[in-house]
Length: 259
Length: 258
Image 1 (cartoon, each protein chain N blue to C red):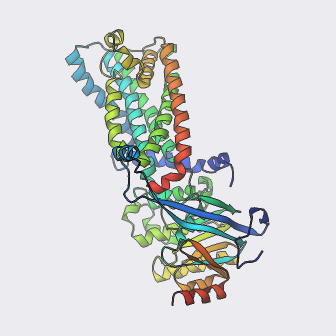
Image 2: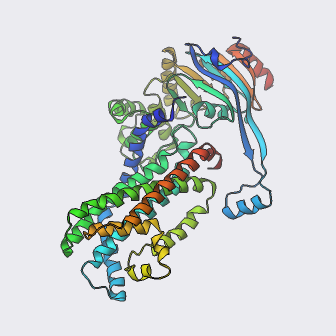
Image 3: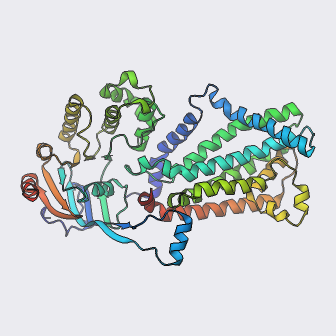
């Protein structure tokens, strides 16, 4: 199986070392010129046969395999399809074509603290978000103190979240998502939250996790960060996979691209 | 990709958390808290009894019980269906970022409303005892129409939550439709005259009226109307089938519309 060109990978090539395999992923959106969301409009358009959409493929023919413990940097300009790809892998979008195979627990950190309830206190949100990630209440009982300690928000933990600053929310989100070592971790531009001190702390926690064999997909525009964290990388451009391979080669190519 | 069943087992915790959240947040920051779910129907019953009891001349002691039984059930249906209708849009923050079986949102909002409804049934019991409407053995059968009520709420909730994603107008339209449902449920009048007239079918084919009517029969220790029971049950099952099919077929598209 070559790493450079992954388009020939088929599902039956999945091995024990495979953490993630994508085969021929395509994601199509219908860009309607005007949004039809009222019943009246819908029926008028239906009768007039005006319900037309512009098709837009945000991703097309994406195939690659990530082995266990690999740290893959996802590079690409704005609108290249990076976040869409992450959402397909996380299961938020169902791909129009192709299949995603994943092995183990996947923790998506696409936007820290999405899914928090603003009326709920910090502590209640820990349980809620834990349940979103699939952990039981009993399990969260054991972990809740670790989480609170890591966030350094002890004095605010019984305050409703609407009174939190965005940095505080991000801390809470980070602490919950990393309380258990997931098998696959998706990081979409999340290492740029919080103050410098917390950023250092969270990067250290992530690096510790990676040392113990967590597979990481890392989306960032910060090339230095990608160099520091990743051992492989891929470039997306207008929804297709340009290159996939060792970090140095790919980053060099990306730097060429954005010149 | 695991089977759907595994999925739902894994997320049963989340379901419980969402139900818990709904109940906790409903009365947060009010001094009386969950007691409101009992006081509120009691106060409405008093108002309705004063207004309709005097206007229509129903001075019987059982009239408040009659009103309360009907209103409790109608309120549950209207609140749970409205909550389900908005559930997907209200949780879009979560839906857009992480994978969660989407049916959890309408189902949990229906369930938490139903639990609050069961708590408020205590008021009905107290009012009946005070007014001398004593429950009999037959009253235990009230559990049957209550189960049908839950099924109907689930069916209507699934259908509405699907439609609500694609058409925002549904929120306003549903309010109007609920008003129609309310007036054809005979909440604050006795339906006998209407049922005997040519337009009786308007009530008879309203599944919620059938549920309310049977529930009242149980409360007053009378026998249920078997035709109404069967009709409301079949209607509810049918609505669940339609709801599940519509939801299943469209849930992958939700994300593109919210």
